[in-house]
Image 1 (cartoon, helix red, strand yellow):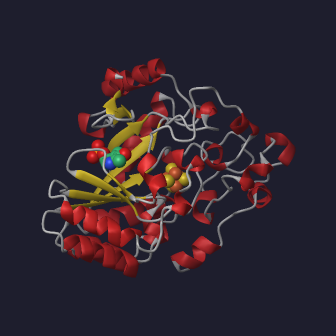
Image 2: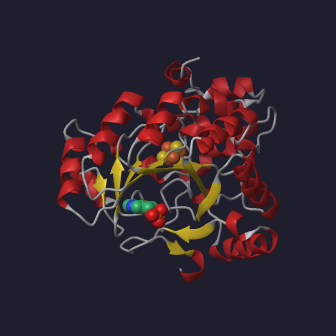
Length: 325
Ligand SMILES: *Cc1c(COP(=O)(O)O)cnc(C)c1O
Ligand code: SF4
């Protein structure tokens, strides 16, 4: 099946996913009203990796809206990383030296319940002229060496649209590197088309692809195979994860994750602490627990399979290593 068709056939009704998983609605008490603000959305490829009849499956917990989302402590807000510029119809974020993050689209293939995007009005920032404005802004600032396509999920755009973006960036002499942050290679592996791989390989820009995997079960054999194909074409592959309570906050799971990523040709990059967005408090792991996990991992994994544990702190010039927060 073509990836676009596959995307359209995603689960958007909680009841349908529960039927697939042979789960009773009373067993898990989902938050059906979630559709009204941050809709439920899961691809079939991702759903197929959730174990049936297990209400605590670590993949299911990432996508299923529950009543826990209604609990919101005071230090959780709608804009925890203060991406205020986006609200002013500007889709270029410049927080760190040498890098600019371009919000190429507001859409995603899957809605992860812990995502900071859940409370963000991205739909309003992607106006038709916005991309052109961003290219102009980038060409005026010679300090920008790397452009990061993010979102939403930039691989929701089709190969033709991506090609146009690549070409526009390549025309700007001081831009040397192009990075794509996307969860699609994992939640919709068919998105890694031959054409896309060729685009990444053949552009004169130095490219990298940062995927997003939180749990080893997210990498089934088909996904591993398609990531390896990318790697074999010479594309640098990195992974970022979010540390999530009851999902990946234990040493054995994180060791397995690093090992399976390497098998797929991907190196661990960041382990993010949760951004404190409204509705996600039940996913938070304390700094003390995270530091202890990090220390245990260090004694078990080779250095190159250790992700850096970081937190995004607003107004800072980089992500901050957890030990320094
Ligand atoms: C995370 C992020 C980046 C990339 O940071 P790296 O440390 O280079 O991965 C760039 N811009 C913004 C706004 C970010 O949030
Ligand atoms: S931006 Fe990433 S983490 Fe957030 S909902 Fe989309 S795929 Fe999930």
